[in-house]
Amino acid sequence: MGTFNREANLNDNIFFQRGVVTSTNHWSRPSYQKLYDYLFNLYLKSTIIKDYDVYLMGGVLYDFNTTWDLDICLVGGNHSDEKIEKDLNFMMDMGLNQFNLLLDVTWYEQRPSNLIYQEMVENDFKPNNMIHKKIGYTKKQINEEIEERDLRNHPDFVLLTEHLVQGNYGLNSTYGEKLINKVKNSSKPETITTFSVMDFLEKGESYFYTHTNR
Image (cartoon, rainbow, N blue to C red; front, top):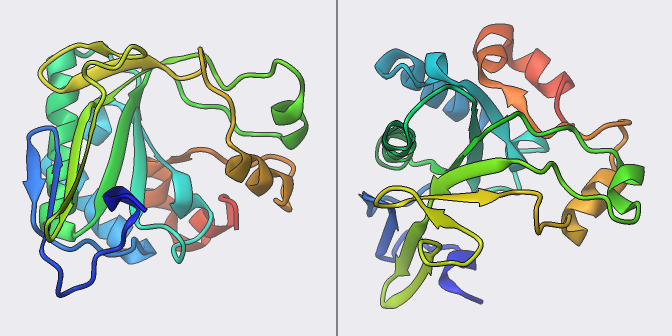
């Protein structure tokens, strides 16, 4: 098991770095209230939620008990790569160092589609073919154990700024077995991949639970 897949105990010394953002805080699982507090403060302290269409993704759309990170995507906006990198760094730093939340934040050129099982298993069906940008360097250390991931020289990515890389999500991608099984076992005809942050802030907890994959 690599360091990225290990859960640190509270008595472990940890160090986490993504791009220029660093932290020695232990993060905790997201919850509805922690998400609300983080996103409300992000709205108050930056223009990010106004500058992009911002969506929740990943494990928080299923439950809060089996995920350790908070997946968010920023969509669209005519912004420079430098601004995108700055905004991703701001969100990561606020999450780790103010709210003890581990974020995985990506910029997409368009909103990812919802998923339907039959489409996912059809021959030659691929995920949405779209450009995405994210911070390309990550380091995690638990005590003396260290693991690094660096996409800045990876052949599937283009380095845009100091740490921001660009890839094409659907060009060489296929859906993983874990995700396919999640969609197959869903009680809903479509599996939700994104949930609007503005809806999260404005429409309340009941709406969030009934319009995600619960």
